[in-house]
Length: 275
Image (tube, rainbow, N blue to C red; front, side):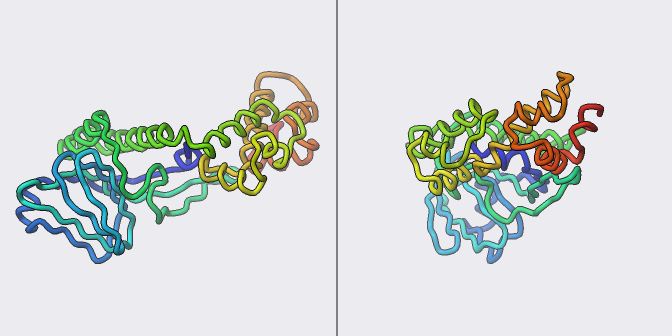
């Protein structure tokens, strides 16, 4: 699961729309955009149609989820006797990260990496969430924007879970999970990328690439994250000296530990302990 992306995912919902039979009657069963302007995250609730994106053609049917990113040539077509109907979130998003106590934002240009462009989900709970979000957006009740954003985040998480379940039997995904478990159990020790790769019987280069694709973090980054989280716990829950905490969490020395900790939190370990 790409939880690293989800942690940094900062969307702004601009609209929630329903493309139903009345809409298609008005537009003569064709929706064409020479160049899209927003991100679109859509779920097909009934009917059939075709989606064309940059020369590739995808069939749409009930239970399909599809994404469209900005600056893409898009064409959707359908027929009057079995009109494709879907509900869409229109949004922009940014990826955020913290460095030295400051939030840095980067606008997202690619699709949300929790599924492909077109996938079959077929989950009733997702359909209900899309319908509820559309009704909330139309109602304009107090707090509707926040409630719709919350619904959208729940959809993203649910799709992320379903994708992970579908990939759980993939040998590479299993190896990444095994590597993650190894790091969680040995982060206090001096371990290397090569040691982790040997444990899961993959080359270091291939494991690093696969680990990044599945988790959103590099192997070393994930290892440092585990060590920092343990250090934060010990700083708040014990009176151990900084040097002993550094050693207990697997850092090579306390100076490196302090430098990494400050970059992550914006505070040195002593200030964090007293905050």
